[in-house]
Every structure is written in C-alpha cells, then in structure tokens.
Picture 1 (cartoon, rainbow, N blue to C red):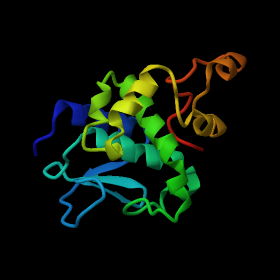
Picture 2: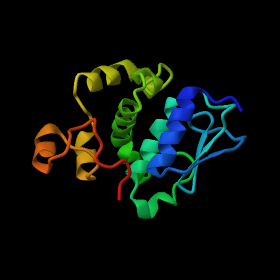
Picture 3: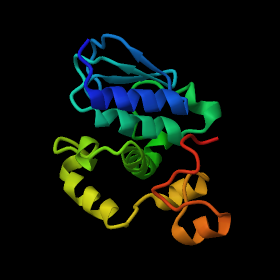
Length: 165
C-alpha cells in the first residue's frame, strides 16, 4: 500500500475526531476517485486515491450531518438530498482542517476540483472571507470574531468542535 505522508496525516486526524476509515479496494466509479462513504465511514482505496485532500472534503460532508444520521450516509452526496445544501459548510470545514493540519491549501483545493474555482476559494479563505461560516456557526462548530468573543472561544478557522452533534 502506497500512502503518502499527507494521506497518513489526514487519516490520523479523521480517526482522532471520530470519522472511521477503512482501506479497501473500490472497484466501482466514485464521485472522488478512491473514496467511498459507506454507513457513515470512509472507505479509501489508496491505489485509486488521486488527491489526499479529497479525504478532507468528504470528511466535511460526514461532519456536517447530525450524529444520529451519519450511519445513513452511503455513496455519493445526491443533489436532491438535504446533505447537498451542506456543501459550503463542508468546503469551509475542509479549509479549517487543512489549517489545523498545517497543509498547503492546494492539497484540498487542487486544480482538478471545485469546478475550476479552487484558486478563487483559496483567495477568499486566505483573505478572511469565510463563505459558509454562518452554517458552521448555526451548527455550533465555529464562530466569527464577534460571536467567538461573546463565547470566549477563538474565531474561525479555529473549530470549537469538528463533528456536529
């Protein structure tokens, strides 16, 4: 099994915050190569995984779903399901995770992803424009500076909690 140091760092982080991972061959096509969500767990095929940062994006989707519903997550996020509306939160969550892990933003926001908007997303986040922060705030996961001050916590990109209750 050929696992890069970045991939290992990400998988260790996911396990520490409560997202189960499992290495297994994935024979079917998946939305992101080498990654499949099964019963709220992340199945990883290291031979097909193209971008280690995709693990953080998919983990963001898992983290956004209430704990009581996570076990129902399977396959790709469907456009007609409520989880699709959590996309901005998952994108911002993955940015917080890469900052926490001291990874370069291009690890997650690579040229092959985000419909050609990776550079724009990096520019927004690095300048402090956190698209999706109201969603994370509503979930009690992270806060903007005024609300963080009121709650006596650090502001985003600090995460008060990584997983939604």
